[in-house]
Image (cartoon, rainbow over all chains, first blue to last red; front, top):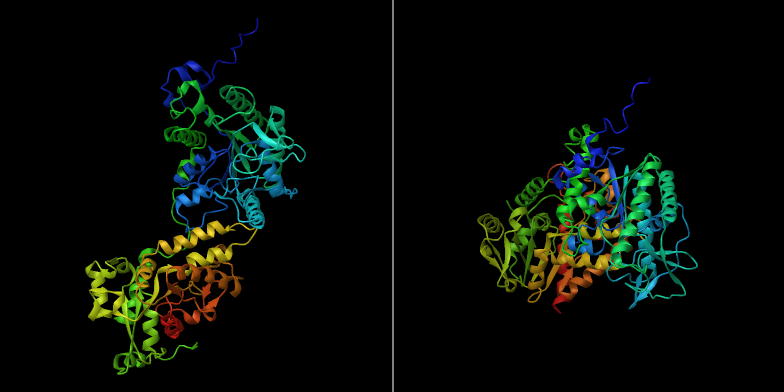
Length: 358
Length: 263
Protein backbone atom coordinates (compact mmCIF):
# COMPACT_ATOMS: atom_id res chain seq x y z
CA UNK A 1 0.00 0.00 0.00
CA UNK A 2 1.40 3.42 -0.93
CA UNK A 3 1.17 6.28 1.46
CA UNK A 4 -1.89 8.50 0.86
CA UNK A 5 -0.94 11.59 -1.21
CA UNK A 6 -2.33 14.86 0.16
CA UNK A 7 -4.38 16.72 -2.43
CA UNK A 8 -2.83 19.74 -4.16
CA UNK A 9 -4.93 22.21 -2.17
CA UNK A 10 -3.43 21.16 1.10
CA UNK A 11 -0.90 23.70 2.26
CA UNK A 12 -1.89 26.41 -0.14
CA UNK A 13 -1.76 29.91 1.26
CA UNK A 14 -4.86 31.63 2.63
CA UNK A 15 -5.25 33.71 -0.51
CA UNK A 16 -6.09 30.57 -2.48
CA UNK A 17 -9.39 30.06 -0.65
CA UNK A 18 -12.39 32.28 -1.19
CA UNK A 19 -13.80 31.75 2.27
CA UNK A 20 -10.68 32.88 4.08
CA UNK A 21 -9.29 35.33 1.51
CA UNK A 22 -12.49 37.12 0.55
CA UNK A 23 -15.66 36.14 2.39
CA UNK A 24 -14.09 36.45 5.82
CA UNK A 25 -12.88 39.99 5.21
CA UNK A 26 -14.18 43.47 5.00
CA UNK A 27 -13.58 44.18 1.29
CA UNK A 28 -11.12 46.94 2.15
CA UNK A 29 -9.02 44.37 3.98
CA UNK A 30 -8.74 41.88 1.14
CA UNK A 31 -5.02 41.55 0.60
CA UNK A 32 -2.31 39.73 -1.34
CA UNK A 33 -4.22 40.22 -4.57
CA UNK A 34 -1.02 40.41 -6.54
CA UNK A 35 2.29 38.56 -6.41
CA UNK A 36 4.50 40.86 -8.46
CA UNK A 37 7.10 39.34 -10.72
CA UNK A 38 9.55 42.23 -10.47
CA UNK A 39 10.18 45.09 -8.07
CA UNK A 40 9.22 48.64 -8.87
CA UNK A 41 11.12 50.93 -6.55
CA UNK A 42 11.72 54.63 -6.28
CA UNK A 43 14.88 54.29 -8.32
CA UNK A 44 13.13 52.70 -11.28
CA UNK A 45 12.08 54.93 -14.13
CA UNK A 46 8.46 54.25 -14.88
CA UNK A 47 6.55 55.30 -17.98
CA UNK A 48 2.79 55.13 -18.37
CA UNK A 49 0.46 54.98 -21.35
CA UNK A 50 -2.90 53.62 -22.31
CA UNK A 51 -6.45 54.30 -21.34
CA UNK A 52 -7.46 57.20 -19.13
CA UNK A 53 -7.16 55.16 -15.94
CA UNK A 54 -3.37 55.07 -16.48
CA UNK A 55 -3.10 58.70 -15.43
CA UNK A 56 -4.08 57.78 -11.88
CA UNK A 57 -1.13 55.46 -11.79
CA UNK A 58 1.36 58.16 -12.72
CA UNK A 59 -0.11 60.60 -10.21
CA UNK A 60 0.14 58.06 -7.40
CA UNK A 61 3.74 57.28 -8.31
CA UNK A 62 4.70 60.95 -8.35
CA UNK A 63 2.90 61.57 -5.05
CA UNK A 64 4.98 58.86 -3.42
CA UNK A 65 8.28 60.07 -4.76
CA UNK A 66 8.65 57.47 -7.50
CA UNK A 67 10.48 58.29 -10.72
CA UNK A 68 7.70 58.68 -13.19
CA UNK A 69 9.29 59.72 -16.44
CA UNK A 70 7.61 62.67 -18.10
CA UNK A 71 9.18 62.73 -21.55
CA UNK A 72 7.22 65.79 -22.63
CA UNK A 73 6.93 67.97 -19.56
CA UNK A 74 4.66 70.98 -19.65
CA UNK A 75 6.32 74.35 -20.03
CA UNK A 76 6.71 75.85 -16.58
CA UNK A 77 4.76 78.94 -17.57
CA UNK A 78 1.54 77.01 -18.10
CA UNK A 79 -0.84 76.72 -15.18
CA UNK A 80 -1.76 73.25 -14.01
CA UNK A 81 -5.16 73.56 -15.66
CA UNK A 82 -3.66 74.79 -18.93
CA UNK A 83 -1.15 71.94 -18.93
CA UNK A 84 -3.93 69.42 -18.47
CA UNK A 85 -6.00 71.04 -21.20
CA UNK A 86 -3.09 70.49 -23.55
CA UNK A 87 -2.51 66.95 -22.29
CA UNK A 88 0.81 67.56 -20.61
CA UNK A 89 1.72 65.38 -17.66
CA UNK A 90 -1.09 62.90 -18.16
CA UNK A 91 0.90 60.13 -19.78
CA UNK A 92 4.66 59.95 -20.19
CA UNK A 93 4.31 61.20 -23.75
CA UNK A 94 1.61 63.35 -25.31
CA UNK A 95 0.06 60.47 -27.18
CA UNK A 96 -3.32 61.04 -25.64
CA UNK A 97 -5.26 57.93 -24.68
CA UNK A 98 -4.04 54.74 -26.30
CA UNK A 99 -7.18 52.70 -25.86
CA UNK A 100 -6.36 49.57 -27.82
CA UNK A 101 -3.58 47.11 -28.47
CA UNK A 102 -3.54 48.06 -32.14
CA UNK A 103 -3.11 51.73 -31.28
CA UNK A 104 -0.16 50.85 -29.07
CA UNK A 105 1.31 48.78 -31.87
CA UNK A 106 0.82 51.66 -34.30
CA UNK A 107 2.45 54.22 -32.05
CA UNK A 108 5.44 51.97 -31.37
CA UNK A 109 5.86 51.11 -35.05
CA UNK A 110 6.00 54.82 -35.92
CA UNK A 111 8.36 55.63 -33.08
CA UNK A 112 10.62 52.60 -33.03
CA UNK A 113 10.44 51.05 -36.50
CA UNK A 114 10.02 54.14 -38.65
CA UNK A 115 6.81 52.80 -40.14
CA UNK A 116 5.34 55.22 -42.68
CA UNK A 117 3.30 57.86 -40.93
CA UNK A 118 -0.32 58.31 -41.96
CA UNK A 119 -0.85 61.22 -44.29
CA UNK A 120 -4.43 61.59 -43.18
CA UNK A 121 -5.39 64.59 -41.11
CA UNK A 122 -8.69 66.12 -40.11
CA UNK A 123 -9.75 69.73 -40.53
CA UNK A 124 -12.42 71.67 -38.72
CA UNK A 125 -13.05 75.39 -38.74
CA UNK A 126 -9.63 76.05 -40.23
CA UNK A 127 -7.79 74.04 -37.57
CA UNK A 128 -5.90 70.78 -38.08
CA UNK A 129 -6.40 67.61 -36.04
CA UNK A 130 -4.21 64.52 -35.78
CA UNK A 131 -6.31 61.32 -36.20
CA UNK A 132 -3.84 59.58 -33.88
CA UNK A 133 -4.62 62.03 -31.06
CA UNK A 134 -7.33 64.45 -32.13
CA UNK A 135 -7.87 65.87 -28.68
CA UNK A 136 -4.25 66.57 -27.83
CA UNK A 137 -4.65 70.34 -28.37
CA UNK A 138 -8.12 71.62 -27.48
CA UNK A 139 -8.46 73.63 -30.68
CA UNK A 140 -6.29 71.54 -32.95
CA UNK A 141 -3.16 72.77 -34.69
CA UNK A 142 -2.66 75.97 -36.68
CA UNK A 143 -1.64 74.13 -39.83
CA UNK A 144 -0.42 70.82 -41.15
CA UNK A 145 3.23 71.73 -40.57
CA UNK A 146 2.54 72.30 -36.89
CA UNK A 147 0.62 69.04 -36.62
CA UNK A 148 3.53 67.20 -38.24
CA UNK A 149 6.11 68.94 -36.06
CA UNK A 150 4.19 68.11 -32.91
CA UNK A 151 3.69 64.50 -33.96
CA UNK A 152 7.41 64.25 -34.64
CA UNK A 153 8.03 65.54 -31.14
CA UNK A 154 5.83 62.95 -29.48
CA UNK A 155 7.43 60.14 -31.47
CA UNK A 156 10.89 61.34 -30.46
CA UNK A 157 9.72 61.53 -26.86
CA UNK A 158 8.27 58.04 -27.06
CA UNK A 159 11.57 56.67 -28.40
CA UNK A 160 13.44 58.38 -25.62
CA UNK A 161 10.99 57.25 -22.95
CA UNK A 162 11.06 53.61 -24.02
CA UNK A 163 14.83 53.54 -24.22
CA UNK A 164 15.29 55.12 -20.78
CA UNK A 165 12.54 53.42 -18.81
CA UNK A 166 12.81 50.45 -16.49
CA UNK A 167 9.07 49.76 -16.35
CA UNK A 168 6.30 50.44 -18.83
CA UNK A 169 2.82 50.49 -17.33
CA UNK A 170 0.18 50.04 -20.01
CA UNK A 171 -3.53 50.21 -19.24
CA UNK A 172 -5.67 48.37 -21.73
CA UNK A 173 -8.96 50.14 -22.30
CA UNK A 174 -11.08 49.09 -25.26
CA UNK A 175 -11.65 46.43 -27.86
CA UNK A 176 -13.96 48.56 -30.01
CA UNK A 177 -12.35 50.89 -32.51
CA UNK A 178 -12.65 52.55 -35.90
CA UNK A 179 -10.28 51.93 -38.78
CA UNK A 180 -9.73 53.06 -42.33
CA UNK A 181 -10.92 50.24 -44.55
CA UNK A 182 -7.99 50.40 -46.99
CA UNK A 183 -5.01 51.59 -44.99
CA UNK A 184 -6.20 49.86 -41.79
CA UNK A 185 -5.11 52.94 -39.88
CA UNK A 186 -6.78 52.82 -36.51
CA UNK A 187 -8.14 56.10 -35.22
CA UNK A 188 -8.02 57.24 -31.63
CA UNK A 189 -11.64 58.31 -31.99
CA UNK A 190 -14.38 57.69 -34.49
CA UNK A 191 -14.04 60.17 -37.39
CA UNK A 192 -16.73 62.81 -37.15
CA UNK A 193 -16.87 62.92 -33.35
CA UNK A 194 -14.27 65.47 -32.32
CA UNK A 195 -13.19 66.31 -35.86
CA UNK A 196 -13.04 64.76 -39.31
CA UNK A 197 -15.94 63.41 -41.29
CA UNK A 198 -17.40 59.98 -40.96
CA UNK A 199 -17.64 58.12 -44.26
CA UNK A 200 -19.06 54.58 -44.09
CA UNK A 201 -17.31 53.74 -47.36
CA UNK A 202 -13.94 54.51 -45.81
CA UNK A 203 -14.38 53.92 -42.12
CA UNK A 204 -15.24 50.64 -40.48
CA UNK A 205 -16.08 49.55 -36.99
CA UNK A 206 -13.92 46.78 -35.54
CA UNK A 207 -14.48 44.97 -32.27
CA UNK A 208 -11.09 43.40 -31.76
CA UNK A 209 -10.96 39.74 -30.88
CA UNK A 210 -8.86 37.96 -28.30
CA UNK A 211 -6.61 36.60 -31.06
CA UNK A 212 -6.17 40.01 -32.71
CA UNK A 213 -5.43 41.80 -29.46
CA UNK A 214 -3.04 39.09 -28.37
CA UNK A 215 -1.22 39.33 -31.71
CA UNK A 216 -1.01 43.13 -31.55
CA UNK A 217 0.21 43.06 -27.96
CA UNK A 218 2.86 40.46 -28.78
CA UNK A 219 4.04 42.63 -31.67
CA UNK A 220 4.10 45.72 -29.44
CA UNK A 221 5.97 43.86 -26.71
CA UNK A 222 8.50 42.63 -29.26
CA UNK A 223 9.19 46.18 -30.38
CA UNK A 224 9.60 47.31 -26.80
CA UNK A 225 11.97 44.43 -26.11
CA UNK A 226 14.08 45.26 -29.15
CA UNK A 227 14.28 48.92 -28.19
CA UNK A 228 15.06 48.21 -24.55
CA UNK A 229 15.84 44.59 -23.63
CA UNK A 230 15.71 45.35 -19.90
CA UNK A 231 12.29 46.92 -19.99
CA UNK A 232 9.62 45.31 -17.81
CA UNK A 233 5.97 45.70 -18.73
CA UNK A 234 3.13 45.94 -16.27
CA UNK A 235 -0.32 45.52 -17.75
CA UNK A 236 -3.54 46.72 -16.20
CA UNK A 237 -7.08 46.82 -17.52
CA UNK A 238 -9.14 49.96 -17.17
CA UNK A 239 -12.17 49.43 -14.94
CA UNK A 240 -13.96 52.36 -16.60
CA UNK A 241 -16.96 51.11 -18.64
CA UNK A 242 -17.48 52.05 -22.28
CA UNK A 243 -19.05 55.45 -22.86
CA UNK A 244 -20.89 54.04 -25.85
CA UNK A 245 -20.79 50.95 -27.99
CA UNK A 246 -21.19 50.53 -31.72
CA UNK A 247 -21.38 46.76 -31.41
CA UNK A 248 -25.15 46.57 -31.40
CA UNK A 249 -25.14 45.11 -27.91
CA UNK A 250 -26.31 46.85 -24.78
CA UNK A 251 -23.49 49.06 -23.53
CA UNK A 252 -23.39 47.06 -20.28
CA UNK A 253 -22.90 43.69 -21.97
CA UNK A 254 -20.55 45.26 -24.51
CA UNK A 255 -18.47 46.58 -21.61
CA UNK A 256 -18.45 43.16 -20.00
CA UNK A 257 -17.33 41.56 -23.26
CA UNK A 258 -14.57 44.09 -23.95
CA UNK A 259 -13.13 44.07 -20.47
CA UNK A 260 -13.26 40.29 -20.25
CA UNK A 261 -11.33 39.92 -23.48
CA UNK A 262 -8.74 42.50 -22.41
CA UNK A 263 -8.42 40.88 -19.00
CA UNK A 264 -7.91 37.48 -20.61
CA UNK A 265 -5.24 38.78 -22.99
CA UNK A 266 -3.43 40.54 -20.14
CA UNK A 267 -3.46 37.37 -18.06
CA UNK A 268 -2.31 35.28 -20.98
CA UNK A 269 0.60 37.60 -21.76
CA UNK A 270 1.66 37.69 -18.13
CA UNK A 271 1.63 33.87 -18.08
CA UNK A 272 3.58 33.61 -21.34
CA UNK A 273 6.29 36.23 -20.90
CA UNK A 274 8.67 36.65 -17.96
CA UNK A 275 9.06 40.39 -18.52
CA UNK A 276 5.31 41.00 -18.46
CA UNK A 277 3.15 41.17 -15.36
CA UNK A 278 -0.50 41.95 -14.70
CA UNK A 279 -1.65 44.13 -11.82
CA UNK A 280 -5.32 43.61 -10.86
CA UNK A 281 -6.54 47.18 -10.53
CA UNK A 282 -9.46 46.11 -12.69
CA UNK A 283 -10.60 43.53 -10.15
CA UNK A 284 -10.17 45.88 -7.21
CA UNK A 285 -12.61 48.33 -8.73
CA UNK A 286 -15.04 46.08 -10.55
CA UNK A 287 -15.30 42.85 -8.59
CA UNK A 288 -18.59 42.16 -6.80
CA UNK A 289 -16.59 41.60 -3.62
CA UNK A 290 -16.12 45.38 -3.54
CA UNK A 291 -19.84 45.96 -4.05
CA UNK A 292 -19.34 48.77 -6.55
CA UNK A 293 -18.20 51.08 -3.76
CA UNK A 294 -15.50 52.66 -5.86
CA UNK A 295 -17.80 53.93 -8.57
CA UNK A 296 -19.41 57.36 -8.66
CA UNK A 297 -23.22 57.50 -8.91
CA UNK A 298 -22.98 57.31 -12.71
CA UNK A 299 -21.56 53.81 -12.21
CA UNK A 300 -18.75 54.70 -14.58
CA UNK A 301 -16.31 57.17 -13.01
CA UNK A 302 -13.95 55.80 -10.40
CA UNK A 303 -13.91 57.89 -7.22
CA UNK A 304 -10.59 58.99 -5.70
CA UNK A 305 -10.99 56.54 -2.82
CA UNK A 306 -11.05 53.75 -5.39
CA UNK A 307 -7.89 54.95 -7.07
CA UNK A 308 -6.28 55.32 -3.69
CA UNK A 309 -7.25 51.80 -2.67
CA UNK A 310 -5.87 50.42 -5.93
CA UNK A 311 -2.55 52.14 -5.39
CA UNK A 312 -2.37 51.13 -1.72
CA UNK A 313 -2.74 47.54 -2.87
CA UNK A 314 -0.05 48.10 -5.47
CA UNK A 315 2.49 49.38 -2.97
CA UNK A 316 1.51 46.86 -0.27
CA UNK A 317 1.97 43.94 -2.66
CA UNK A 318 5.27 45.32 -3.90
CA UNK A 319 6.56 45.78 -0.37
CA UNK A 320 5.37 42.31 0.66
CA UNK A 321 7.17 40.68 -2.26
CA UNK A 322 10.28 42.85 -2.05
CA UNK A 323 10.68 44.07 1.55
CA UNK A 324 13.91 45.86 0.73
CA UNK A 325 11.92 48.36 -1.34
CA UNK A 326 10.72 50.01 1.85
CA UNK A 327 14.24 50.63 3.02
CA UNK A 328 15.36 51.93 -0.35
CA UNK A 329 15.10 55.39 -1.70
CA UNK A 330 14.21 57.25 1.45
CA UNK A 331 16.14 60.18 0.07
CA UNK A 332 14.56 59.88 -3.33
CA UNK A 333 12.18 62.74 -2.71
CA UNK A 334 14.98 65.16 -2.02
CA UNK A 335 15.75 67.62 -4.78
CA UNK A 336 18.16 66.50 -7.44
CA UNK A 337 18.83 69.76 -9.26
CA UNK A 338 21.40 72.38 -8.55
CA UNK A 339 18.92 75.22 -8.57
CA UNK A 340 19.83 78.08 -6.30
CA UNK A 341 17.84 77.95 -3.09
CA UNK A 342 15.37 80.81 -2.68
CA UNK A 343 17.08 82.02 0.49
CA UNK A 344 20.41 82.23 -1.33
CA UNK A 345 18.78 84.13 -4.15
CA UNK A 346 17.22 86.60 -1.72
CA UNK A 347 20.59 87.15 -0.12
CA UNK A 348 22.18 87.87 -3.49
CA UNK A 349 19.42 90.37 -4.28
CA UNK A 350 20.01 92.16 -1.00
CA UNK A 351 23.77 92.28 -1.58
CA UNK A 352 23.34 93.64 -5.07
CA UNK A 353 20.96 96.31 -3.82
CA UNK A 354 23.11 97.30 -0.88
CA UNK A 355 26.18 97.53 -3.08
CA UNK A 356 24.39 99.98 -5.34
CA UNK A 357 22.45 102.02 -2.83
CA UNK A 358 23.82 101.13 0.59
CA UNK B 1 28.12 101.14 -26.82
CA UNK B 2 30.66 100.68 -24.02
CA UNK B 3 31.76 97.11 -23.51
CA UNK B 4 34.55 97.45 -20.98
CA UNK B 5 33.75 98.09 -17.41
CA UNK B 6 35.36 101.42 -16.46
CA UNK B 7 36.60 102.36 -13.03
CA UNK B 8 34.02 103.02 -10.41
CA UNK B 9 33.20 106.67 -9.91
CA UNK B 10 30.46 109.12 -9.06
CA UNK B 11 30.54 111.12 -12.27
CA UNK B 12 27.12 110.10 -13.43
CA UNK B 13 25.53 110.65 -10.07
CA UNK B 14 27.02 114.10 -9.77
CA UNK B 15 25.81 114.86 -13.23
CA UNK B 16 22.23 114.04 -12.36
CA UNK B 17 22.30 115.61 -8.91
CA UNK B 18 23.84 118.90 -10.04
CA UNK B 19 22.48 119.33 -13.54
CA UNK B 20 20.94 122.81 -13.47
CA UNK B 21 19.30 122.59 -16.87
CA UNK B 22 17.62 119.30 -16.20
CA UNK B 23 14.27 119.21 -17.89
CA UNK B 24 13.44 115.51 -17.90
CA UNK B 25 12.59 113.52 -14.81
CA UNK B 26 13.09 109.82 -15.35
CA UNK B 27 12.59 106.98 -12.87
CA UNK B 28 14.05 103.51 -12.80
CA UNK B 29 11.75 101.10 -11.03
CA UNK B 30 12.39 97.50 -10.16
CA UNK B 31 13.78 94.88 -7.85
CA UNK B 32 17.49 94.30 -7.27
CA UNK B 33 18.03 94.58 -11.02
CA UNK B 34 17.86 98.37 -10.72
CA UNK B 35 21.34 98.06 -9.22
CA UNK B 36 22.91 97.63 -12.64
CA UNK B 37 21.59 101.04 -13.69
CA UNK B 38 22.93 102.60 -10.51
CA UNK B 39 26.28 100.93 -11.13
CA UNK B 40 26.27 102.41 -14.63
CA UNK B 41 25.50 105.85 -13.21
CA UNK B 42 28.22 105.53 -10.59
CA UNK B 43 30.66 104.47 -13.27
CA UNK B 44 29.80 107.44 -15.47
CA UNK B 45 28.40 105.33 -18.25
CA UNK B 46 25.04 107.04 -18.63
CA UNK B 47 24.16 109.83 -21.04
CA UNK B 48 22.21 111.93 -18.55
CA UNK B 49 22.51 115.38 -20.02
CA UNK B 50 19.31 117.18 -19.12
CA UNK B 51 17.98 114.23 -17.21
CA UNK B 52 17.24 113.87 -13.54
CA UNK B 53 17.46 110.19 -12.80
CA UNK B 54 15.85 108.68 -9.74
CA UNK B 55 15.17 105.18 -8.50
CA UNK B 56 12.28 103.45 -6.81
CA UNK B 57 12.08 99.83 -5.78
CA UNK B 58 13.16 97.17 -3.35
CA UNK B 59 15.30 94.07 -3.48
CA UNK B 60 14.29 90.45 -3.35
CA UNK B 61 11.59 89.61 -0.84
CA UNK B 62 10.70 93.27 -0.18
CA UNK B 63 9.80 93.74 -3.80
CA UNK B 64 6.76 91.58 -3.09
CA UNK B 65 5.64 94.23 -0.63
CA UNK B 66 5.25 96.87 -3.30
CA UNK B 67 1.64 97.01 -4.37
CA UNK B 68 -0.41 98.98 -6.81
CA UNK B 69 -3.06 100.91 -4.91
CA UNK B 70 -5.15 103.69 -6.44
CA UNK B 71 -2.89 103.75 -9.49
CA UNK B 72 0.20 104.33 -7.31
CA UNK B 73 2.85 101.94 -6.10
CA UNK B 74 3.11 101.81 -2.34
CA UNK B 75 5.24 99.86 0.10
CA UNK B 76 3.14 97.86 2.51
CA UNK B 77 5.83 96.77 4.96
CA UNK B 78 8.41 98.55 7.06
CA UNK B 79 11.23 96.63 5.39
CA UNK B 80 10.18 97.78 1.94
CA UNK B 81 9.71 101.34 3.19
CA UNK B 82 13.23 101.22 4.64
CA UNK B 83 14.62 100.16 1.26
CA UNK B 84 12.79 103.01 -0.41
CA UNK B 85 13.99 105.50 2.14
CA UNK B 86 17.53 104.59 1.15
CA UNK B 87 17.16 105.03 -2.56
CA UNK B 88 14.51 107.74 -2.85
CA UNK B 89 13.88 109.45 0.49
CA UNK B 90 11.70 112.13 -1.11
CA UNK B 91 9.23 109.62 -2.47
CA UNK B 92 9.44 106.71 -0.10
CA UNK B 93 5.69 106.81 0.58
CA UNK B 94 4.49 106.11 -2.92
CA UNK B 95 5.30 106.25 -6.60
CA UNK B 96 2.77 107.75 -8.94
CA UNK B 97 3.07 107.84 -12.72
CA UNK B 98 2.66 111.59 -12.70
CA UNK B 99 5.82 111.98 -10.60
CA UNK B 100 8.10 111.52 -13.62
CA UNK B 101 8.22 112.07 -17.36
CA UNK B 102 9.04 108.46 -18.06
CA UNK B 103 9.86 105.15 -16.45
CA UNK B 104 12.14 102.20 -16.93
CA UNK B 105 10.82 99.05 -15.30
CA UNK B 106 13.73 96.63 -15.03
CA UNK B 107 13.72 93.06 -13.79
CA UNK B 108 10.59 93.15 -11.67
CA UNK B 109 10.61 89.34 -11.64
CA UNK B 110 9.86 89.16 -15.32
CA UNK B 111 12.65 86.82 -16.37
CA UNK B 112 13.70 86.46 -20.00
CA UNK B 113 14.90 82.95 -19.32
CA UNK B 114 11.46 81.79 -18.22
CA UNK B 115 9.87 82.61 -21.54
CA UNK B 116 12.53 82.75 -24.21
CA UNK B 117 14.73 79.81 -23.25
CA UNK B 118 12.07 77.06 -23.58
CA UNK B 119 10.84 78.60 -26.79
CA UNK B 120 14.31 78.82 -28.26
CA UNK B 121 14.61 75.12 -27.52
CA UNK B 122 11.31 74.33 -29.21
CA UNK B 123 12.29 72.64 -32.43
CA UNK B 124 9.82 70.97 -34.80
CA UNK B 125 9.92 67.22 -34.34
CA UNK B 126 11.95 67.29 -31.13
CA UNK B 127 10.73 66.76 -27.58
CA UNK B 128 9.90 70.15 -26.15
CA UNK B 129 8.31 71.39 -29.36
CA UNK B 130 5.57 73.88 -28.52
CA UNK B 131 2.58 74.68 -30.67
CA UNK B 132 1.63 78.26 -31.43
CA UNK B 133 -1.37 77.95 -29.11
CA UNK B 134 0.84 76.83 -26.22
CA UNK B 135 3.35 79.57 -26.96
CA UNK B 136 0.58 82.14 -26.89
CA UNK B 137 -0.62 80.87 -23.51
CA UNK B 138 2.92 81.03 -22.18
CA UNK B 139 3.42 84.61 -23.31
CA UNK B 140 0.13 85.69 -21.86
CA UNK B 141 0.83 84.01 -18.53
CA UNK B 142 4.43 85.22 -18.42
CA UNK B 143 3.22 88.80 -18.58
CA UNK B 144 -0.05 88.50 -16.69
CA UNK B 145 1.39 86.65 -13.71
CA UNK B 146 4.04 89.34 -13.16
CA UNK B 147 2.83 92.00 -10.76
CA UNK B 148 5.59 94.36 -11.92
CA UNK B 149 4.34 94.08 -15.46
CA UNK B 150 0.77 94.77 -14.43
CA UNK B 151 2.00 97.90 -12.67
CA UNK B 152 3.91 98.93 -15.81
CA UNK B 153 0.73 98.55 -17.80
CA UNK B 154 -1.11 100.88 -15.42
CA UNK B 155 1.69 103.46 -15.43
CA UNK B 156 1.82 103.32 -19.22
CA UNK B 157 -1.67 104.77 -19.34
CA UNK B 158 -0.20 108.00 -17.96
CA UNK B 159 3.48 108.18 -18.88
CA UNK B 160 5.88 106.42 -21.27
CA UNK B 161 7.06 103.14 -19.77
CA UNK B 162 9.96 101.00 -20.97
CA UNK B 163 10.24 97.45 -19.73
CA UNK B 164 13.51 95.54 -19.57
CA UNK B 165 12.92 91.96 -18.38
CA UNK B 166 15.66 90.43 -16.24
CA UNK B 167 18.39 89.32 -18.64
CA UNK B 168 19.33 85.76 -19.42
CA UNK B 169 21.20 83.83 -16.73
CA UNK B 170 24.88 84.62 -16.49
CA UNK B 171 27.49 82.68 -18.42
CA UNK B 172 29.43 80.21 -16.29
CA UNK B 173 26.77 79.79 -13.62
CA UNK B 174 25.06 76.69 -15.04
CA UNK B 175 26.47 73.20 -14.91
CA UNK B 176 27.08 71.32 -18.15
CA UNK B 177 24.09 69.13 -17.29
CA UNK B 178 21.81 72.13 -16.79
CA UNK B 179 23.02 73.64 -20.03
CA UNK B 180 22.29 70.45 -21.92
CA UNK B 181 18.88 70.05 -20.36
CA UNK B 182 17.60 73.57 -20.68
CA UNK B 183 19.37 75.57 -23.35
CA UNK B 184 19.62 75.55 -27.11
CA UNK B 185 23.16 76.82 -27.25
CA UNK B 186 22.88 77.15 -31.02
CA UNK B 187 19.87 79.49 -30.91
CA UNK B 188 20.40 82.26 -33.43
CA UNK B 189 19.93 86.02 -33.17
CA UNK B 190 17.13 85.64 -35.72
CA UNK B 191 15.32 83.14 -33.51
CA UNK B 192 15.65 85.46 -30.52
CA UNK B 193 14.54 88.43 -32.60
CA UNK B 194 11.36 86.61 -33.62
CA UNK B 195 10.50 85.97 -29.98
CA UNK B 196 11.37 89.51 -28.90
CA UNK B 197 9.06 90.72 -31.68
CA UNK B 198 6.20 88.68 -30.20
CA UNK B 199 6.88 90.08 -26.75
CA UNK B 200 7.16 93.62 -28.07
CA UNK B 201 3.85 93.23 -29.83
CA UNK B 202 2.12 91.95 -26.70
CA UNK B 203 3.60 94.75 -24.59
CA UNK B 204 2.77 97.37 -27.20
CA UNK B 205 -0.87 96.32 -26.94
CA UNK B 206 -0.62 97.42 -23.30
CA UNK B 207 1.20 100.63 -24.18
CA UNK B 208 4.49 99.32 -22.75
CA UNK B 209 7.75 99.56 -24.72
CA UNK B 210 9.93 96.48 -24.59
CA UNK B 211 13.66 96.85 -24.21
CA UNK B 212 15.22 93.67 -25.59
CA UNK B 213 18.37 92.26 -24.12
CA UNK B 214 21.09 93.66 -26.38
CA UNK B 215 22.49 91.00 -28.71
CA UNK B 216 26.09 91.91 -27.85
CA UNK B 217 25.42 90.78 -24.28
CA UNK B 218 24.22 87.30 -25.28
CA UNK B 219 26.25 84.13 -25.62
CA UNK B 220 25.51 80.42 -26.05
CA UNK B 221 22.07 81.01 -27.42
CA UNK B 222 20.50 82.23 -24.22
CA UNK B 223 23.02 83.30 -21.59
CA UNK B 224 24.42 86.69 -20.62
CA UNK B 225 28.09 87.16 -21.39
CA UNK B 226 30.37 87.12 -18.38
CA UNK B 227 31.47 90.68 -19.25
CA UNK B 228 27.97 91.91 -18.36
CA UNK B 229 27.44 89.86 -15.21
CA UNK B 230 27.71 91.36 -11.76
CA UNK B 231 31.18 91.35 -10.33
CA UNK B 232 29.87 91.18 -6.79
CA UNK B 233 30.73 87.92 -5.04
CA UNK B 234 32.16 84.82 -6.65
CA UNK B 235 31.65 84.69 -10.39
CA UNK B 236 29.58 81.53 -10.50
CA UNK B 237 27.46 82.38 -7.45
CA UNK B 238 25.12 84.94 -8.93
CA UNK B 239 23.16 83.74 -11.88
CA UNK B 240 20.99 86.75 -12.47
CA UNK B 241 22.41 90.17 -11.65
CA UNK B 242 24.14 92.33 -14.20
CA UNK B 243 26.85 95.00 -14.06
CA UNK B 244 27.05 98.67 -14.94
CA UNK B 245 28.01 98.00 -18.55
CA UNK B 246 24.75 96.13 -18.97
CA UNK B 247 22.78 98.79 -17.13
CA UNK B 248 24.25 101.47 -19.38
CA UNK B 249 23.14 99.67 -22.52
CA UNK B 250 19.61 99.44 -21.18
CA UNK B 251 19.13 102.91 -19.77
CA UNK B 252 20.91 104.76 -22.57
CA UNK B 253 18.70 102.96 -25.04
CA UNK B 254 15.58 103.84 -23.07
CA UNK B 255 16.54 107.51 -22.91
CA UNK B 256 17.35 107.60 -26.61
CA UNK B 257 13.94 106.18 -27.39
CA UNK B 258 12.01 108.40 -25.01
CA UNK B 259 11.65 111.40 -27.38
CA UNK B 260 10.29 109.10 -30.06
CA UNK B 261 7.81 107.62 -27.63
CA UNK B 262 6.82 111.03 -26.31
CA UNK B 263 6.25 112.37 -29.78
